[in-house]
Image 1 (spheres, helix red, strand yellow):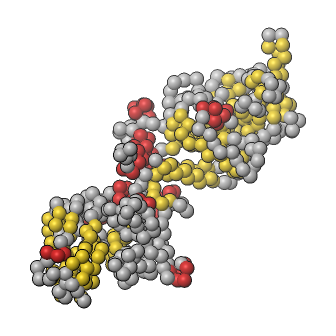
Image 2 (cartoon, rainbow, N blue to C red):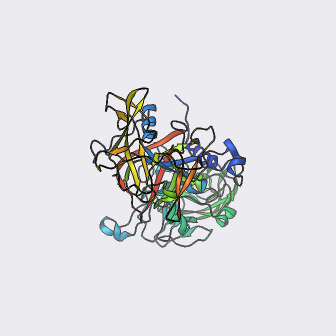
Image 3 (cartoon, rainbow, N blue to C red):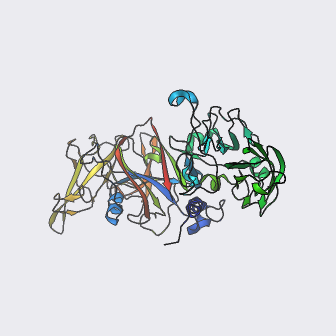
Amino acid sequence: MAALLTDQFRIFSARKFIKALEGPIATQSDDDAGETRDRVYIFIGRPQSWDDENSPPQAVDSFSEFSGSYDDMVSMKRVLASDTIQVIRRIDWVSPEQTTGGLGFTYDMYRHDYSPSKTASSGATKLYDSDFYVVNSQYQVYKCIYNGTSPSDPNGKPSTVEPTGTSTSIITTSDGYRWKYLYTIPVAQVLKFFSNDYMPVFTNDAVKTNAVAGEIDTVLINSAGSGYNNGTYDNVPINGDGTGGRVSIVIDGGRIISATVTSGGTGYTFGKINVDNITGIGTGASGQVDVIIPPPSGHGFDPVIELGAFRVMVNAKLSYAEGAGDFPVDNDYRRIGLITNPKKFGTEELLSDLTVSASKAVIFSPTFQGNYSPDEIITQTRVVGGQNVTARGRVISWNSTTKVLKYYQNNVDGIFPEVTGTLNEFDGSNAISGATSGAAGQPDVNFPAIPNSSSRTINNTEYDLGMKFNNGYAKPEIKSNDGLIIYIDNRRSISRANDQIEDIKIVIEF
């Protein structure tokens, strides 16, 4: 097929993903924005162990996997537009001392016409796959305009001098490289969006203002030719759809040894230099000088387009037991994911809270002395319709101060009898027993005195429970199996602690 879905569609999709989190009017409240603003939440789940803890199973793109993720989900935190950014591969400028033989690394140069038949020095067949930009030690980002490519060095030369400075003009280093400064990553954004593999993209206003659409910065000697008259030929025009482009060409030994842009002109989307038609150059042949066309609107105008930012990084920090205990610190988790547009439990209303608990909970009397253990199985037997019914679940978290027990029930740990039985809800005042701890407490079905309360006072201290209780029980704050799970990552266990912050970076490639 001749059709092609281009990388520009990928960049477009990445931009739209972030924009969707803002809504048409970024300053609107969630209530005003309504469904015009998409809500994305990062979630953690799966506190129970894998069959093989060293080899978590590959996540499966299926409705069954989605339902399972909801069943053992623990907590969710909202991802705001400010928690996202378009990113590109991180390519560090590497000093020669850090390279084999101390020679330095040869970077690709920007070209508008890479293809399977015209590859980069690295072998890349597309611009965005090539190593044509770098970030230096000061988090300044540069695009390589020229890397020393010539007929004698068709792949360019090693870079031995680190590019520095923020000039809006082309920066030439003593190793012959020419660089275009694009932007500097702010320190706060380095901490938030800079990783071992990816780095964020920004636009520098000064660079953008000084960008000139269709201005030629670079010409390359593709073939030196032979038989030309020696000399320097100035004001050689760049033919094409732009105006004002001029180059200086030097002939020595009948061959082209130098081609330099003396005036970049404007408005070029294609260009050509007719070497054989230069006045006085003689009757030589085969000389060819390629014209490198800048990106639309010029170098540095839109780094997202120029550098190929078709990935979005999502950053979330899980700080201690934030959200009034929405994120328990006495257990671990093995699954990270993203959900779009989840709804509040029992409603059709989109969630807007910054943190929510996705687990079930039960509360006991302040005088209860037992202590449940994370990950243990709990059961409760009661009589329904004259028959014994047993509810079964697994402990997520136990708060010995507030006496709140969080748990989940899935298609394994919620079934009684195990495997062959059914899932029954915990309810009423009958004792809930822990299989490992031996704890057995009666739910405080008289709590709260006022329905849908989310606080408890113990010894004159008021505690925010983070969940609304009725008759001793609290439902998850999200509607199960509603909202779209768009990302799942099954991992080895990640332990939590009350003095710990987890910095989670998820990169989505469109």
